[in-house]
Length: 157
Image (cartoon, rainbow, N blue to C red; front, side, top):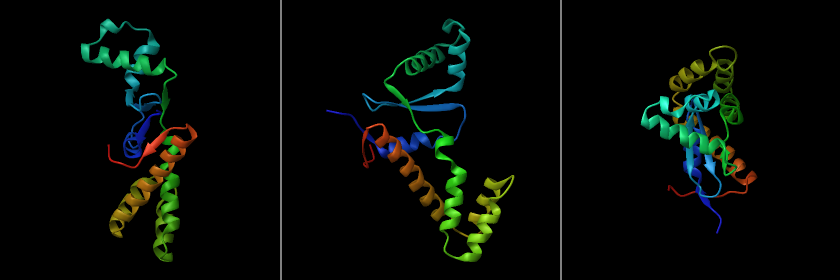
């Protein structure tokens, strides 16, 4: 019997907005694991695990296991997800021309994410944005799961 993973759980792991953590899926067990950049750096430095507190030693061992095993697949990164592109697609999906143009104007240049956030609050479309964003994350997760031949379920496990 092959492993079946929860799409919801995969999306939740993908939605960790940080460069300091990386999520992986064990393709044999379906376990989702997040490892920290700090532990990756410790392993790469060759520093002795004994120099760290017990809780971190465990995190370092787990990180080493993930990095040294072909059983773990990295989940899509923020570069694979491309949240700017999702924002742009959302703007283009807005039917009202003036609002669509205003939103597109907000996402141009430096500070785009902040202006976009302010605009969706100003125009009362926060819920629409989060629904659109969630669906985009789910699409990315489904594509990734299918490309790695991993079965998934839509349940809330």
